[in-house]
Amino acid sequence: MKKSNGKLITKFKIAVFISGRGSNLKSILKNSNYQKTNYKVSLVVSNKKDALGLLIAKKNNIKTIISDFDKSKIKEKKVLKILKINKIHLICLAGYMKILSKNFIKSFDGKIINIHPSLLPKYKGLRTHERVLKNKDKFTGCTVHHVTKHLDSGKIIFQSKIRILKGDTAKIIEKKVRKIEHKIYPLAINKVLSNY
Ligand code: GRF
Image (cartoon, rainbow, N blue to C red):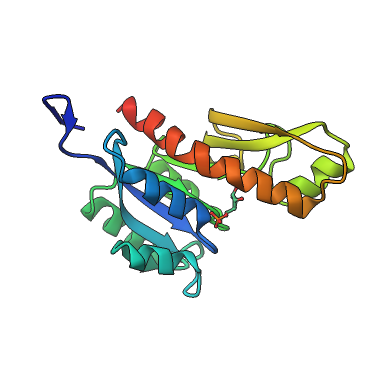
């Protein structure tokens, strides 16, 4: 990122990968407008053509790619090519429900991050809030971490936690956790990119 008189003149380019609602994409975009933010969203990739997040991308004039590329090497190659052509510095998975291939992760080594709705290393995988409740945990939260070939196991970048209150259901916890996700994901992106 270049600076002139203390002002940012170019920002790092990120691609956000989604599969659904895109509320994290929305908060990442909102924060990208702040002057001190060191990134801009250049591309949104979705494996689903009807992902609601695509509407958010279009509204913000962000280029979109729809590709379910996880089972096709040719499609994966095409997506990688587009990411390289667009000079993407960092890929941010935000509710992306596919597992990236080892080859894909290697191509963007150390430059893919993800947000997960639990306090990793606890509760990797799906249905995190249900498991938190079942185990009667007192706290839960969310984690932004680097993506490696091992699911939800990469180095932790940022975590935020909330207390579980009496009467909280999985739905209530999901809502509360999503709220803190929206705060920490933009901060984590800035943190990672500030080391570039
Ligand atoms: C978030 O809860 C995130 O932690 C998980 O998927 C959800 C995506 O939500 N990986 P949204 O599409 O950003 O609203």
